[in-house]
Amino acid sequence: MSRIVITGIGVVAPNGGNAKRYWAALQEGRSAIKRIRRFDPSPYATQLAAEVEDFEPDEFVPKQIQVQTDRWTWMALAAGQMAMDDASFNPADYDPFRTSVVTASSSGGNEFGQREIQSLWSKGPIFVGAYQSIAWFYAASTGQISIKHGVKGPNGVVVTEGAGGLDALQHSRRTIRRGVDAVICGGTEAPICPYALVCQMRNGMLSTATDPDEAYRPFDVRANGYVPGEGGAMMIVERLEHAQQRGVPQIYAEIAGYGATHDAYHPSKPAPDGRQLARAIRLALRESAIQPAEVDVIFLDAMGTPDHDLLEAQAIREVFGEHATQVPATAPKTMVGRLYSGGAALDVATASMAIRSKCIPPTINIEQPRKGCELDFVIGKSKAREINHALLIARGFGGFNSAMVLKRFTG
Image (cartoon, rainbow, N blue to C red):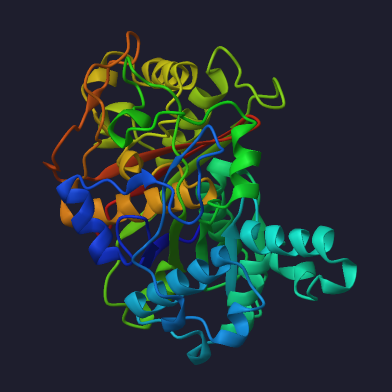
């Protein structure tokens, strides 16, 4: 079985428009959660979000492509280019049939779709642009990246909501083991527009707090829902031999194990026992050939609702036993909100940088853990620690559970 490594990272996040600025913001505990600025949120129960402000699409996306695509695709193109630059990887230098693109998406091109629907109902069908047929579509980012860089290997898109970022990495891993050398993969999301916000509010899990410091408090006694965010991360994932042969500048981490399950319980509610989430974690640890005590940090899903938080903590206790309160646990997404399919991809980028930097980024807004949610949270400031194994947990609306173990590359 080929060893699969992460060699490049590109980030577009609410608190940093590239990986360097994002990482610096995490160390400072700087939150990007604010009152929505892209439109007037006054009519909506949810009025807070984490918007990407430090991003200029013109740097990465030609104007003729911008008019054909949604903001979510602009960010994927930008993060993908940054990841390629970081890995010193130019697809044009390699066999196009041995390079692929795999992205995750939850809702596609929201803002583009809203604009065209408004034209349809206010002016008529002849005023709907031709690009509506492709700009909203889940696979648009994958397609645009592959077209831009001439990538002709087996491409794909994963639609498993918040679990999508991990699932896209695993699909990339599987694709490499079937004969591809490298994959441009990850996920982004742009769900901050009136149409998208209304859709999200229907799940009943968004915070209605108006104070950013009170809004997204996972595992805390004052947990009241989550705050949506936009952005995400793209990565270059390669077969180890390919990366070494081309003289890659760095290897952030090795993908050591993965597990995925489904609650098979309810269209929107999680199963009340958390067993399938625990099973996904066990599967990831088993494939990594490590014991729970060997995990150095857990990157939490951190849904932010009392029921979901309790289920996640319960699953961790079931797998880790007494060690559950001894392994550091963190949720940097408390600074950027839940990015849906961009969230787990950003967690992978964050964990990869944490492994390389020997530093666990903190969680904010956890002051008093709810009963049953007592974990060893890294709160307030970063924690210096050598990380050999990082466990990432992600869940998707509708019962999806995924877990992944990243391993420090030692040769």
